[in-house]
Image (cartoon, rainbow over all chains, first blue to last red; front, side):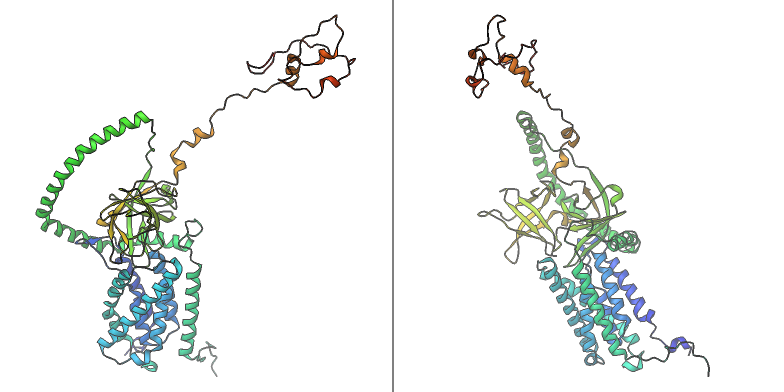
Length: 171
Length: 362
C-alpha cells in the first residue's frame, strides 16, 4: 500500500473535486433548451456536498468551500449574493448537528434525512427571499426545485460511501 | 535533537470545535454578503465587479460546458419534429385559414389607420434601435429568474433596456459588462412591470413570484379583466415602451389573476434588446435645443419720451400747459402741474426713429 492511499481524505478529492463537479453540473442545467417542450429542472447540486460533507466528518474547509460555491452560484444564477451560500450553510449546520444520529442508518432513511435538509435549505431560501424582495416566492416553484434536489441523493450517497470510513476518528 | 522544520507540526486543535467556529464565521460572512446585496436597484454601481467578472466568464464557459446539453436538445427536437410533423401540419393548416381572414382585415385596418393619422396629423413614434443577442444561460429557480446574453456594453447595451423575444416581452437588463448582459425575467420575485389589459385599458403591475405565471397586482375598476384578455405593456413610468405583447390573462389556482407569458411558449435562445431609455429619446433633442426664437426688439425710452411730446413752437414761451403730455393716458406723468413753470424745456432733439412697434403712438 502506497503512502498516498493510506491518506485517502485528501481535501481535493473529497472537497475540491465534488465542488467543481457540482458547479459544472449547475452550468450544464442552466442551458436554455427545451426537451419535448419542457424546460430542464434546476436542482441545487451543491446540496449534495452540504449533506455528504457533514456526514463524512466535521471540517474547517468544508463550510468555506460551501460559502464560495454558494456565492458563485448566486452570481451565476443572478440571485441575491449570499442567498444560496447562507441556505446551504444552514442545511450543513443542521446536518452536522445531528450527524451522530444519522450515521449508520439505512439508505432510504438517509435519503429521508437528505430530503429533510434539502427542505430546510429551501425554507431558509424562502425566508431570506421574503425578507429581501418583500414578496413570497411561488410555493409550487419551491416544491419543484425541492423535488429535483431530493432526487440527487444517490450522488450524495456515493460520496458518503467513498469517504465515510476514511477518517477513523469520526467513524 | 534534530531541528524541527515545522514548529506548528505538533500543534493540535480540537477539530470539532474549530470546525464549528469556521462554520459560524462562514454563516456570518454569508449573511453580511446577503444584506449588502442590492440586486433590486437599477443603478450601475449596484452591479459589482464580481458579478461582471462571473458574467463574462460564464458567457464564455457556458457555451462550451452546455454544448452537449444543447446537442441533446436539438436531437430530441428533431425526433419530436419527425414524429409530430403530420399533426403539426394539420394544426398549421387550420391556423393558416384563420390567419388569412385576420390578414385581410389587418390590411384594411392599416389603410384606414394611415388615412386617419394623416387627417389628424398624428406623428407616429420612430422605430427603436435594437441589438440581437444569444442567450447562453438560464436560471429558473424560485428565487432567481435571470438569463445571460452574450452582448454587452460594447454594443451599447445599458441597464434598464427592455428585452423581447420573437413572441413578446422577456424582461429587462439589470447588469451589463463588456461581452455579457444579465436579463431579469418578468417571472423573477423582484420584477415589477407596468402593464395594461388591451380590451379595457385597465392598468396593473405585473409582479413576478418565481413561478411561470406572474401575478397582476393593483388591478382597478369593476371586472377589468376576463379570461384570455391580452396583456400589453402600458409604458407607464417610461421604462418600457407601450404596446409590447406580454401574454394572456388567466385565473390562478390561488384566485389571483395571472399571465401566461407569450415569451414562455418556446425556448428563448435568441432575444432582442431594445435600446430604449425613456420617451425623451423619441424626439429629436438636437432640433429642440437649437430652435431659433424671433428677434427681441427693445424700446429706447428716451426716444419714446421725445416722440410723445409735440414739437414746441420757437416763438412761444413755455407755459405749464405746454409741459403736459399730449396723451396722459398713454404715458402717465406723476404731477405735471407741480412742475415749475419757468423750468426751461429741454431742446428738441432731432427726430429719432422709434424702435417701437408700428402701433405705438408717434
